[in-house]
Length: 153
Image 1 (cartoon, helix red, strand yellow):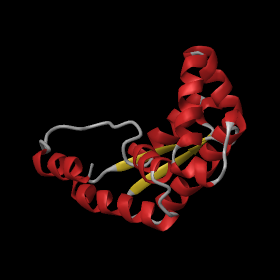
Image 2 (cartoon, helix red, strand yellow; image 1 turned 180 degrees about the vertical axis):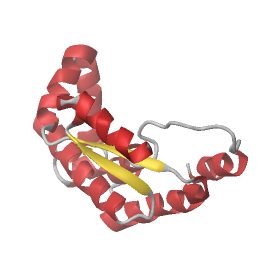
Image 3 (cartoon, one colour; image 1 turned 120 degrees about the vertical axis):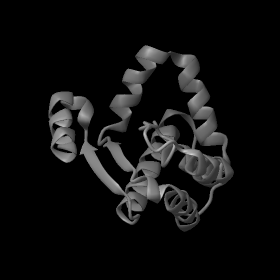
């Protein structure tokens, strides 16, 4: 994964803008935390390394914080179905992190997501990358868009 980030940073076209969904925090945390049960510190080191590669590109992270993960997952199940839910429960509970914490079922999945969000927010607050944390934007997207407008105008 680090090689792909390095390649991207080295080959980025200066006139282009890029928008990424979940590749800076969520995906690395799923790999380092969920899959391999890395410590909070080791996951942070990995993400800091990515940030050092992309820092010259002046990235901005927009983090969508969720204070009611259970409610959001239940809404996602309505859209994505039980097959999706069973797949993500399996990934989060049967990976190294889930096994080490003896997580199981829907409740275990939620506990894993809550801990991942805590770690992501901690990492985000300690990296030198422009960022904004939108608190529960799904409750009022218009307010979230206004906040972003203020940041970019």
